[in-house]
Image 1 (tube, protein in one colour):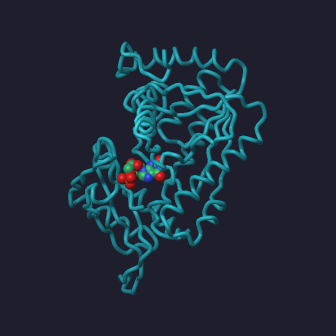
Image 2 (cartoon, rainbow, N blue to C red; image 1 turned 120 degrees about the vertical axis):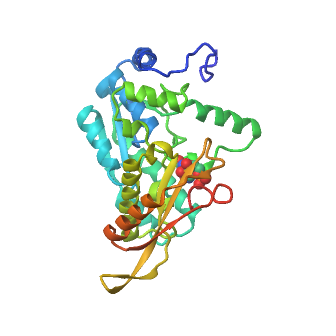
Image 3 (cartoon, rainbow, N blue to C red; image 1 turned 120 degrees about the horizontal axis):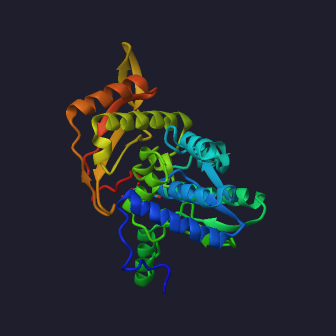
Length: 333
Ligand code: XMP
């Protein structure tokens, strides 16, 4: 039997009971596969890698080494949450790498979106590779592959078209000789979330909206500067907080702020105040191939605007992006 094909008899995991059964089975399988060897995992803090981490911690404890690379393009509080949950609460063997200066240094003055993506993806693999080579006795590499990834690869192989380049961030370095551990590879995303909650991960982590590998790098448009990146991180945190407060967070597929490399004239405290505009984007989609725009009540928009322009240094306007996909892509870069 091809172990990359989901058996027809496999029940859809929709309840805690089914999730617990799946977890018990996987714990057993992972223990059998790994024995007393060590496993390495790139832990981004996204849903899939977090669920794999929690599952493997349950199965093999400290034999799992999680490496979290902070490329400096994470959202507010994200790396801290990884350290808090995995490093402290779950007492994982966690290697935290703050590579902010390295990434931002390489990205300085680079305005071309594709070049930015390549730098971030390439550097991510390099940093991960360096960390891996410092570790002794690693035999396995765990990955948060899920069933749609497998289906997409099969489709891509059949059509002769490569898998979308943007799925390569954090991908497997070609010359790494590890055996793979992929405990959730036959699960759909909704099942991964049910399993994550059954493993005790926080709801907010398990139901986190999708976040691109290059992170805020593709939302800090053009050449990234530290001050604009910081403004973006703060504005995005306010947007997320207000979406949480009004219930939109549960309803909208993806919502974020982008900031262009452009200033306009404004006024603050009776003084001329040149600042960047914060662009709000909130979209709904099933497959990220086409997307529609979520309607946000004006009262919510006003509140977000007041908070962003009042609280975030460097921003003097808030704009709303009403473009569906097509013609816009979901991200601005
Ligand atoms: P676009 O902008 O292509 O985005 O309409 C579709 C979905 O993919 C996400 N996205 C990425 N994910 N690495 C990723 O892992 C990337 O480079 C990347 N670019 C876009 C985007 O956030 C949206 O959910």
